[in-house]
Image (cartoon, rainbow, N blue to C red):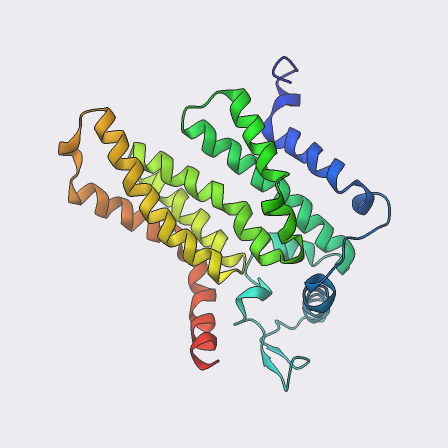
Amino acid sequence: ILKAPRLLRHPLFLYSLLACLVFYRCLFGGQAHFANDLLAQFAPWHDFLRSRLSEGHFPLWNPYLFGGQPCFADLQMMLLYPPNLLTLFFPAATGLTLFFALHMVLAGWGMYRWLKSMKLSEGAGLLGGAAFSLSAFLGWEIIHPPVLAAFAWLPWLFEGLERLAQDLRARRAFFAGLTFALLFLGGSFQITLGAAYGGALYFFFRRWIFLKRNDSHAQWKIRPLLVAGGFFLFGTLPLVGQLIPTEEFSKLS
């Protein structure tokens, strides 16, 4: 693979090809992956959102659950998550298949980038990304699209935090914040909370390791950390529109 033409060994091309092979029967064979919660919950939700949006209605309320309940405020609906909105152009079987394939690509490419940010070799990065995208860790969560989305964004978040730990540049802090926002909008509050705690620990540990290796303990200054924190929060702004109604829904449930 490493000796192939540059375009053919680009991670995006390789992981897209891998996703097409894995989901070949669903993408090109007229089949669909449906089991458990996909049948009982996520496929009906997909069709409900698609029908509401196609009729020009933003679905604030779902009248078909219990006696009716908030729709937009339910984080698992993923109504502000861009990849999910793209899949709503298609019926549930096709849309969910595209969702699975897209997040397999995101997972592999993100893991590749994270490993490369830690100065691993090109081969190690490509192999690590393939192993993660094909792992049972991700494969089992096909039946839970919000969890799958959050897992796919985890390596992107940790890549951003790794690069930020190496250099407290504003754009690196913004990138880390943006990936966290996308992880949140993916719809899994549990994984988001774990990523917040784990990401904070990871950043400070890797920052300590980086400064120790470079004998730069004097660089533990508050001002650069505060500036980086401000740009991180700036990057998370896309989640604010979802956070307020979701917090109210959670508090009143």
